[in-house]
Structure formats: C-alpha cells, structure tokens
Image (cartoon, rainbow, N blue to C red; front, side, top):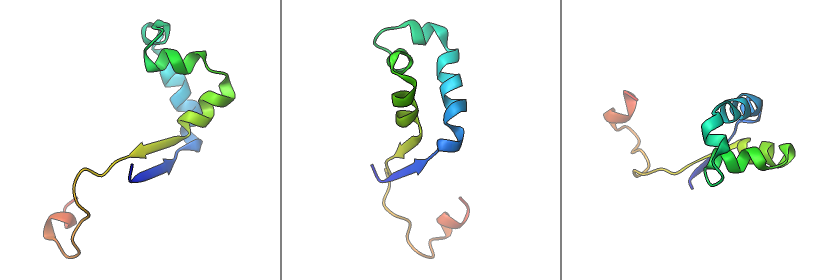
Amino acid sequence: MTTSVDVTPWASAKEAAILAHRSEVARQRALPGILARLPEADRTQIIQTEYFTRLTPDPVKGDPAQLTR
C-alpha cells in the first residue's frame, strides 16, 4: 500500500451502496455480506479509509506524459 485516503465524509454513502446489493449482502463469504454482519461502528471504521497501491514508478519531474494526466 502506498497511499491511504480518509473518505469519512462519504462513509454513509459507501455503507448505503454496500447494503443496497442484497444478493451480495446475503452471501456469507462475500465482502458485502461480511461487512453487513459487523456492528455499525466496526463497519464504519473499516470503510472510512480507502487504500491504494502504486503499480508504476513515481512520476519523473518534467515528464511530458505526466502533464496530460
């Protein structure tokens, strides 16, 4: 993991979206089902941070390819 982002302002929207997928929530081993069965405080703590991993090297300063992104 190279980056974590605090998404607390959107945690309630994420929770609603997860719980809206009833067929996935009903599955015992699917991640939405696991999250749905957790106490609300634990679920909120888990979904309030997004984690990312950089797959390419860091951008090189002055690289024109980085200017178009």
